[in-house]
Image (tube, rainbow over all chains, first blue to last red; front, side, top):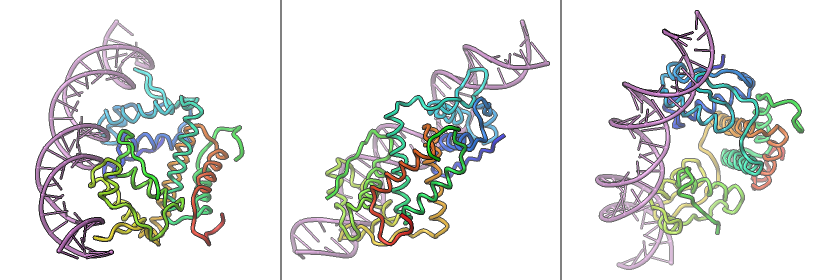
Length: 134
Length: 134
DNA sequence: CAAACTGTATTATCTGTATTAGTACAGTTG
DNA sequence: CAACTGTACTAATACAGATAATACAGTTTG
């Protein structure tokens, strides 16, 4: 199994915390395509959180193409990917990275340190085989 | 001068949009240390936004070490940096980058494409001279 | 089949935050 | 002094996140 924690006082919405942690688990290979997620009620109980909040997290994950939800059966890690058009994907990537880099700049980090942090983060994930330059 | 736009329907709080755009302008070198920002009332008028919202944005920027606010005088781009401890800075950097990289993973991008996007973003900014590896 | 699980939907309520509005005060500048 | 700056309040509104409780619909399994 994989581990989930939630901090109600973190400022970040709980449903987003859940969604992102699942994304992290998938990206790190702790969850593989086809794997079943905890049921809405079970996870809600474990995290001491309202079931609706878990539903919201799972909805987000489905919209982002990370899981599929099957009524009666459960929620499962999805194979493919994003639903998004090429242009939308590129636009999102740029905005994501631009944001992180700008914030890093204001934390006082230079290009070298930023790139190093990126390498570290990349190394933690399990990218699909056959990708471009590593 | 530099340009500011705001989208009240974007989901992102207006005060955060303002704060981030100022951060972007500083990072790109469009605003330099010592430069004066528009007054609270002036910017509020220009953006068709409440003065309190601009105040909030400027408070955020001051907390992040980007500007200083001087009563009666105005708000100015600050020289130094972050107020944060070394460990806090590193932790923030890691979290920022980890987030962006994980989201990029789920957009279907590989390490190479992510690194390219980072290089692009880095090239748009004007990092202080004398930094480490470029 | 039937029981026990899954997700789905709905309604209501509470809370905190973002935003607006208006007013007043305090320091700076010319 | 006059006209600008930021600062500080209070109040009102709107929205989003989270909780609660209930009911319904599909799947799995004994």
